[in-house]
Structure formats: C-alpha cells, structure tokens
Length: 125
Image (cartoon, rainbow, N blue to C red):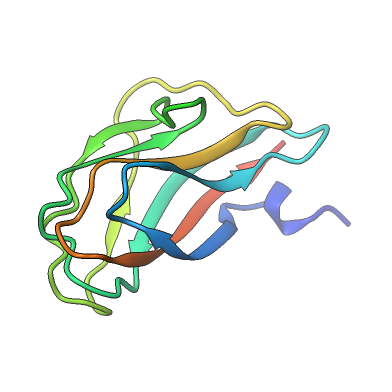
C-alpha cells in the first residue's frame, strides 16, 4: 500500500525550535529520491515568545527559500504558545523535485529571541 504522503494532504514535516529571529535559512523538508513534492500549506505554531518585529519571512526552495511564499509578516503572533498562522500560496507555483530542500528564510525576524514549530503540509507524487 502507498504511503499516506502519496494519497492525501498530510504533514510531511513538523520541525520544532525553528529560530524566528536570526536572519538565516532553515531546511524544513527534503524531498525524497524519486518523488515530487507539492506543498499546500505551512503552519507556524507553538512560539516560545512574541514574534513582534518579525515582518518578513520567505518560504520555499533555493538559497533564499523564496519560491513559494515571500514577504510573510508574522508580527501579529504576539501570544506565545497559542497563536498560530496558516500560510498558503496565492500565485502560480513550481513543484519541488527529488532532493529539493523546502525551508524558511528569516529576512526581518522577531525582536526578541523566539522559536516556533513549523508544520509543512502537502503531498508526494
């Protein structure tokens, strides 16, 4: 029987303790060999502090993780542990080939040190 990741939208990765302050890229999911990944949504949740000041985050592939959603403002997530954000794309996209690394890049991160859990939802073909 096929893996659920090939039959339904599912969480393909759940990455805890992602640094939401430091300007850097974090890999959230690497597409398995022989597969193509179609990302559907990203959920940012379980923050350790306020994301105030976190006005620009990019999601996707490549060195800048900017091929899926760019310039996402998460600064309204000010209540730690309870606020969450569901992010979906609103434009034409390109699938993620085998070996591709899907991630987040902090451009303008939170003012305070903060981590979050990030869930990547999609499916594989």
